[in-house]
Length: 117
Image (cartoon, rainbow, N blue to C red; front, side, top):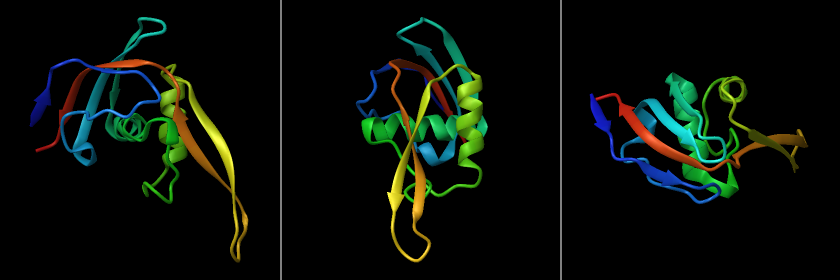
């Protein structure tokens, strides 16, 4: 198990390197710069937060970052108090309609990140 304990400032919407392979992230500890609140995010919600951090202002869709239940991970982050925006984007094709793009617009400091080995 690998740990990154050096605080990294992340002020949305700028992307940041979390300091490890975010596909193997197990947990993230962050502090909101707007409120000072510290949060510990674990599991797939931590993976989702890492995706939001690294994609910055652009955000991401399930087409760009495929994973099961992304809307649930976003729900968990919102339940922790993180404001994640959902932006509806149109798409064409045979099954035209809209899809969601998720974006984090809150300033964070990453306090700690834990990765699976």
